[in-house]
Amino acid sequence: MSEIQNSIQDILDPNFARLLLEAMADGVFTLNDKGKITSWNASMKRITGYTAGEALGNSCMFLNFSQCFSKTCPTGIGQCGIFEHTAVDSKECFLRHKDGHDVSVVKSARAVREENSIKGVVETVTDLTELQKARRKAEEASLRLGERHRFENIIGKSHPMQEVFAALKAVASSEATALIQGESGTGKELAAGAIHYNSERRNNPFVSVNCSALSESLLESELFGHVKGAFTGAVRDRAGRFEDAHGGTLFLDEIGEISPFIQLKLLRVLQEREIERVGESRKRKIDIRIIAATNKDLYGLVKNGGFREDLYYRLKVFPIHLPPLRKRKEDIPLLISDFIHFQNQKTGKQVAGISQSAMRILMDYTWPGNVRELENAIEHAFVLCDGGNMDIFDLPVEIRQFEYQPAALVAPQTILRTLSEKKLTREKLLEILGESEWNKAEAARRVGVSRTAIWKYMKKWDIPLKRP
Image (cartoon, rainbow, N blue to C red; front, side):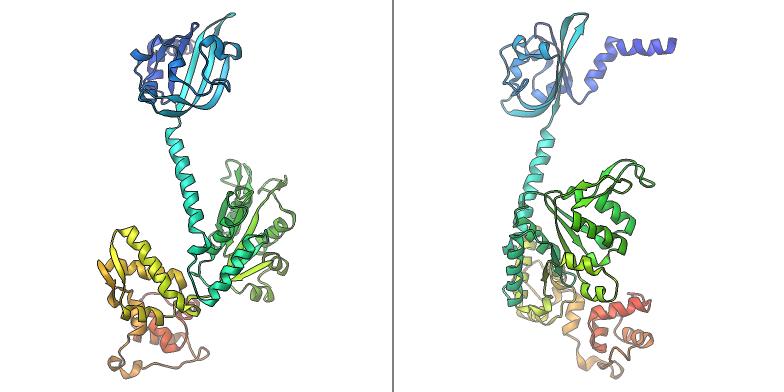
């Protein structure tokens, strides 16, 4: 008992109270029953610019708080209402700094009573300057994101891309569920963003989920949220991406990778516009637009039983197909010019353009990685190119070798082969990879298939990507 009494006595000790106030990050000051400032901690000096000597004895009027009980700062403590209301909770307002600028703060106040009389007031002030900066950055980022997803920023003058632009504009003006199909690297997320930021939902969230990056259980929790105790590690309630996207758009990338269980749950969401968090039976209404994307043949998956037919038709209300770069090669110079401009801004370099010989190589390359691979190739070239025009030897080696393979230097046993895929075996592929110095692009040319097909065969036959 004596230990408890000693602890209470320590807390009531004036020196302890003074140190406690000085250590607080929030500003704290007190007023007597006449409204005069009687104490002023160090954080108040930091927030307002006024020292304790300048503040003590003044009323809080000199701080020019913009709001007091939903009113402008009154003429005196008798009119401010604190004695009448006895408290004001977390009111966001401004105070006037000593140098004249306004400081965004949250203030709270409590009247101190002793028996039936009021002895004074304690007020706390929380500086919101950093929070306001973060808010402005978020708003600026949102504006930049909207700019990035303008239709004009999807580059292409080819006929296939003009058809894509027309489709994107049409679906953006509607609320239809869209399914974007195309190979990896064709810009499916950029297209989804263009739909959202040019729609009526543009001022609401655009939430993206990569469905292939998470296991079934994690994806369920990520999409639908969970309640505390729903599973091991669920230490608190958590809203899912459906709720995060309320009022806006949810972009489901790699939709072809989701399990039958998640397919069924997604179908119910599309039908009922309701979700249930994991571990909860309560239904929650959601107002979202869904855009899905895949690099797979979704209809082929439906025919093979790998994807629900009813969900497929729910998703492809408005299908959009993004063409691979090899089928719109007239857009390559435009894309290169845009990537050079971007890298010049990013790196501070002054690369003027690209030589004709390098452009010829880029035009002849098949681009299995599509626009993303082209962008990476230009970024690679910027590392090596200091200025002037990018040239052949600034490009990645696999792109250079694709076009330039001197026939006179090739040994007889490495002359191009015309193997069909049916005749290709693991042993033959290992032999070709050895002759090609493990260059997948060169091996693909010798077999007569794409580099992507070589990667798939290597994965299928458990062949390492690098020479053992």
